[in-house]
Image (tube, rainbow, N blue to C red):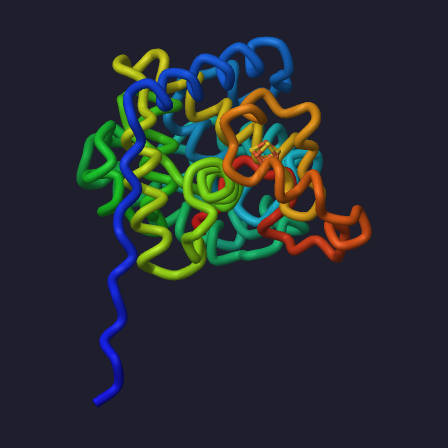
Amino acid sequence: MPPRQTPVPFVEVSAEAATAFRRRLHRWYRQHSRDLPWRRTRDPYRILISELMLQQTQVSRVLDFYRRFLERFPDLHTLAKARPHRVLEAWEGLGYYARARNLHKLAKHVTSTRDGIIPDSPEALRELPGVGAYTAGAVASFAYERRAALVDTNVARVLHRVFAPELAPKSGAGLKRLWHIAEQLLPRTGKTTWTHNQALMELGALVCSARSPKCGECPVHSICASAERFATLPVALRRGRRRPADVANGGTEP
Ligand code: SF4
């Protein structure tokens, strides 16, 4: 009989470590965050569009598409009534067209069954076409300021490096454990959760990048379990081809 594998334990973060992490991260975010249009709104429709566009796509590329798409389809009802080819036309150039098809389906579904109101809980959001765990957490916290966790590719990388370098972050078990860490780190209020989730994603995009983490500039350097490892790694080994999901994006289901 093959030897039984020991299950990977869940990582428990102490209240002190969580507070220290949040304090450093939020202070850094207040000084270094980018001014992005979807951070200036709490409109769930606009947040949803930005989250879907940012999947697998760089922020700099999304900015123009986001503005033009909203000019053409300013609200959920206009989008729901649009012909499918018009929606695909507005998405042309962004790629991953399943996102546009799902978005259109979602708009029709929400207008016909929910009076056009995008739900505010991660559970209800998960029932909508094309909405995964990450997108549900993002819409709940960014549009409704709900106390909801989120883990996209960038966040998974940060949590893995800081709290659990022993985990295999891309396995189902590893990802479950990273979600558990994200939940333990949540601040007490939904309002601060907005800042917290934005800051986690921003750190993964701007500082803790996949191939070249800038540990020297990182606000959580002193409490990161991987900082030393990256400091001793030759620069050439940290560089390499970037994968689409690892670029400075706003949200990607891991
Ligand atoms: S110290 Fe380095 S590895 Fe740790 S979170 Fe910061 S950038 Fe990432």
